[in-house]
Length: 261
Image 1 (cartoon, rainbow, N blue to C red):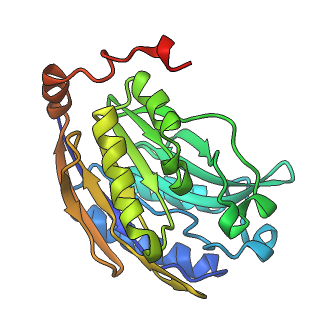
Image 2 (image 1 turned 90 degrees about the horizontal axis):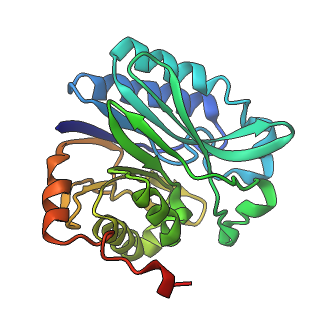
């Protein structure tokens, strides 16, 4: 089974959700012309990490961003991974990602589990408590967000549940570019899955975001990769590769869990 995936690496105007929503819609419409199957947005793209004002500028129960993404998914008949954005729910703000099917239905929701203390995310946001596994066009998928990438247990749990395609929306700074590439490849190799990772572009205060969005196959090979500018990269993956890779080396089957406890 082949799947065409588009990664929407966008610049983000800090603290200006309406500007960012309009830019995201433009990019979604442009990517839809490429006859893709899945579109993926980056992390915290409506506001960026404008944390001191986050309760004032974030979405309320996911709105209006959920409506916008749902409408574009239905119009284009394309699956959309919303990336993540700040949403106020029951008085608490979460860094939340959603998945929409081709009919515009919200089929999955994930609240970021590992909050990034270096940027004081934990002081302004609340951590999620559940991992996210779902099916999209019959393919088992999962979502993690940025800092979650540094915790291999989370992705391994998804792999053990049969995830074949992992989405990673992020705002990963240029200063740690090597970590980004290395960790993404590691998650793909050790779990024998495809990884679709979308970073933001541009700058915010003293942080530069290098882009580097990429699609990686189960052998850790980069199928497609962006540079540092705002752009859309599209590539096709062949899911049959997972079965072929596992036939040669059954990593999950060779685990010895009782020795790890």
